[in-house]
Amino acid sequence: MTHVIEPASSGRAKCRGCDQKIAKGELRLGEKLPNPYGEGEMTLWYHPLCGAFKRPEVLVEAAEITTTELEDRETLLAEAQHGLAHRRLPRFNGAQKAPTGRARCRSCKEMITKDTWRFSLVFYEEGRFEPAGYIHVGCAQEYFDTTELMSRVRQFSPGLDESDLEDLQSQLA
Image (cartoon, rainbow, N blue to C red; front, side, top):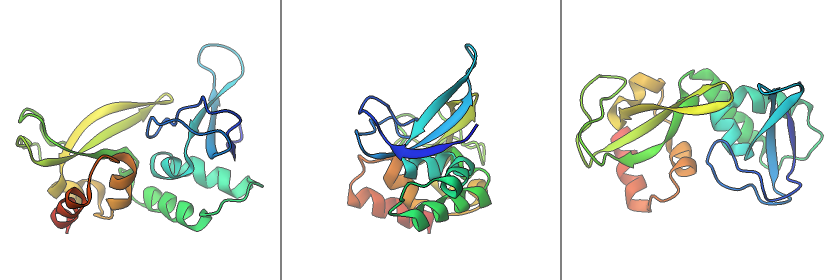
């Protein structure tokens, strides 16, 4: 099964990484998998940047064989290589303030205090991203083995304003 990068033929597909529509004509990454419900294969679609963040090995494979021109090829491949170098990084799913104080950090096992920043995590299993809990922003280095997360924060937490992003960046430093 060969993964693909191609322009979207319609505007109906949703990105599996960010849950946003992929506009008609916009480039998309297709991950080909065996169809669990019958014969043949199925394709899971991603925005190329979401694919670089969440499915880096698929993006690298597809980028090697595609004939489609990728404007930001170097950026996509750099982000994918960063994800491959840090095995837990593709689990990153966004940043948010904890609405309650009931979640426990998957890294340090301490409670995450209400109204403090946290990163949400997902596991990729059988073609799906399943919720996997949260970590403190301060535990990012230990959990992900890197603090270079702001490009992922911007991609998967689009509702954050500049002051939120600055606050997160200061906590990561």
